[in-house]
Image 1 (tube, one colour):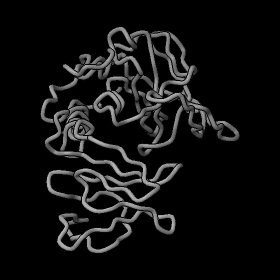
Image 2 (tube, helix red, strand yellow):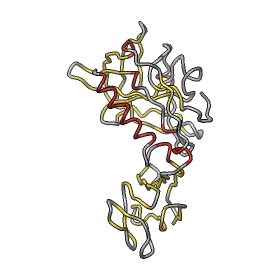
Image 3 (cartoon, rainbow, N blue to C red):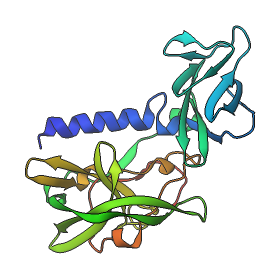
Image 4 (cartoon, rainbow, N blue to C red):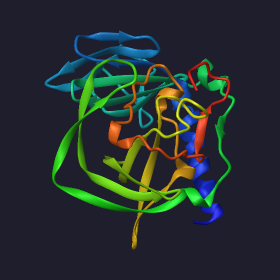
Length: 252
């Protein structure tokens, strides 16, 4: 992997975290069931015919792809209002609206991410071993006591610092990824754990722990992130990737 490639990843990561609609800008997560009025998000939000809808007064400053939203409209994806990005999506229990304030204190006061120096030893080949039938695995979450079932298509096997590991992988982000804890977790890295993606190559998969990253919940209390299942607790100290958010009051 070239240094330019890693620098490009860092730049994309910075936008994901600290951009106008980055993790640090999140100020609210609102499941929509009954009609709902949300601070800083114009209109009344509701579910109609199983879809998310918003009803706005004439002249309301709400746009979708630069086009004003008028009357009652079904919406999906991102919308804009003055100083705020409104992100909509659907979870298992229904539609959700999130507000990202461009001048949120979490964003304007963001001081950066502590990370380890790049270390080639933590970039390792991995083998994906699919299950004959994908398994529904209960995964605990950080901010409640509920376990949510995630479909696990298989396991990734790799050797790190001379120790063989096997972790449960999820599909997403254009490939495979997993949430993990290791010997640094809660000591020198974020206590709930970290995420990392497995990149596909012609020879197989590569897990580059230099790209291990903090979950969104490290940046805003309005996120609720999965914790590592027991299979994903590594005995090796993964001294690579992101460690913690600078000056943010959360457990290491």
